[in-house]
Image 1 (tube, one colour):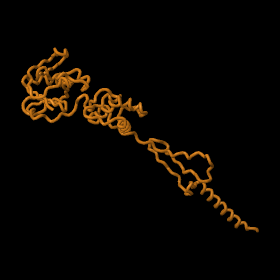
Image 2 (tube, one colour):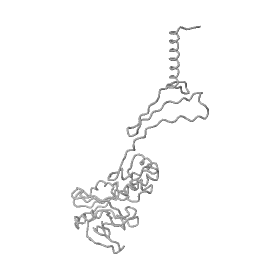
Image 3 (cartoon, helix red, strand yellow):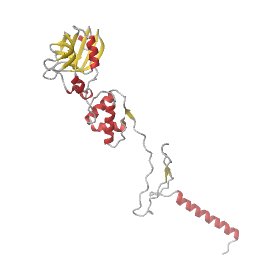
Image 4 (cartoon, helix red, strand yellow):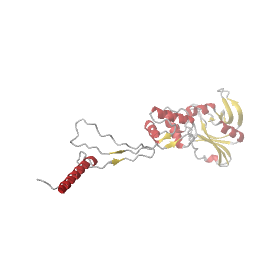
Amino acid sequence: MRIPGRSAAVLAALVSTAALAALSACTVRPADADGKHHLPVRIELPSSHAPTATRSAQSGGAAGSAGRAAPTPAVRPTGAAPRVLWSRGDSGTGVRELQARLRQAEWLFDGPTGTYDDLTERAVSGFQGKRGLPRTGELDTVTWQRLLGMTHRPGKWELYLMGGQPADPPDPRCLTGRVLCVSKTSRTLRWMVDGRTVETMSVRFGSQYTPTREGVFHVYWKSRHHVSTLYDSPMPYALFFSGGQAVHYSYDFAARGYAGGSHGCVNVRDEAAIAALFAQVRVGDKVVVHW
């Protein structure tokens, strides 16, 4: 059958349009395994990542051959850097707990002091490197979670191994006059004048076999460069209050903290603090040692 020229041209145009439509349907909207059609998925990355990545859903229908490689996974944005909790120069109870936990994990052997110093920074950096984390030396949320998982919550003894714990409220016997108010519970000494605390410092006491006596006493002798004749050990800034027991500076306490103990004296580890106290205390001032 012969088709007039104009009709033939129209028919050819229609056939061409249909073919293009069919071709477009195959290349723009492929069918997934569920038979549904999906538009291309666009993944936005943070501005620090360039260029912006895009991907299209792949066809996984019955037409796919066995053993065909799985579709390439989508490009995922890199998460933000973990938040820094503490770093060098910070201080407080949180830093003290960090140091106590680092001691448990055997990455820190000094302190806790409550101050994020160079030793703490090196300990954190070493802990991070051992676990494949960036060695920043800063305590971030990721490092903290790893440390929490490896350690137990430190008790008061561990937190204040080197002193620095808050003082207990003063004993009522300390509220009048000039008093060295010594608490065995909080292991602190308050220097008080007429009920006002002038200075507070960490102290330690005698061991089980040479305990520090409790009660109300008075300073009866001051000896700036004293050396014990019984134990042949230095007792600088000694303020004697009961027999051979005195408040004095201890080199051992400064070096070892509460790992050691005295022979009954009240040891102070801060030399500047005990020097200032020695200058202020007078013979006759009261000493109260209590729990």
